[in-house]
Image (cartoon, rainbow, N blue to C red; front, top):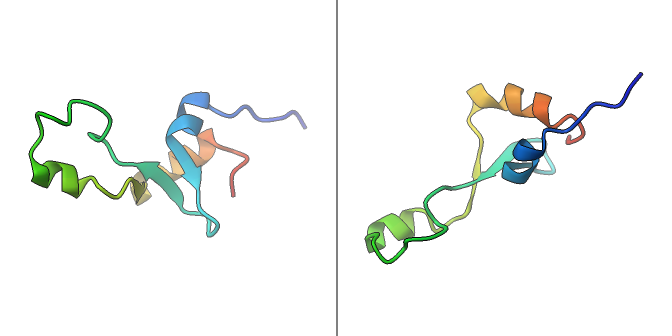
Length: 67
């Protein structure tokens, strides 16, 4: 059986936890932080979040060699 290709765009955005959940990084924390309020910056403070359950099946298809 041939190897499956990993979608590189998805590999840069998502990763797996040890329990098999899909982990993602929160948005709006990269640049232009001077224009954002303290509240906006604090709400995105924790960089890691989990992918939505509805998207998880598609992400797992793009990343076949995770968990």
